[in-house]
Length: 243
Image (cartoon, rainbow, N blue to C red):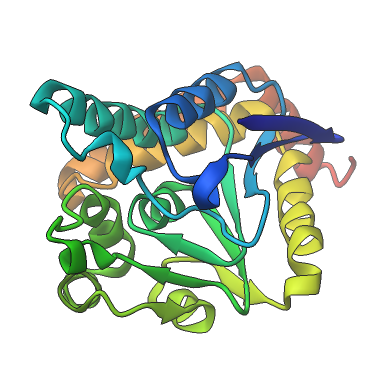
């Protein structure tokens, strides 16, 4: 369901499920567990097969009791919170399609790189199930007007458009996808684990604050950061022009 591998300090969690890696409850719980147990300094979420993720498994919603359907969305929400709560930066490595909750997962990850032939969509409106939970992450990633267009029309966008809109960091040739992701992950993994952990937590805490509250909060974070022994050592080395 989730294959775990390592390249140096980078931990790779590969989705390996049926039906284009749909996010069944079992798949989502497995990914939550893998994220929480990850020991690498950076996490990459990749996928097997021609698709990154085709969203929820609709079989878990058809003819089911409401508490069963509610469980699907509760676990999905837990997954999205976990991606942003773990200390490590999480990078999505996207090939093929990322639709509905799969698109939500990409939007939720801290960073994302996609193959140039990848595409993204929130097509729920076409089957009578508006992508309401995916729009939470999507709206925060690409803004109101662009998100609403994707949600109302169900039209897919290609990887270059996704990069232009801010859904992903960049699009690269398919043959270069894994190497490009690993280059980014390795660059981050080489930095201070303490500083990255602190910075990621502060990023998500301040992002929805108004400006005054955000500055008050981040001043305290930077003061605590600056007083940490690791920061003192590194700043002193920089001032003294040594490693």
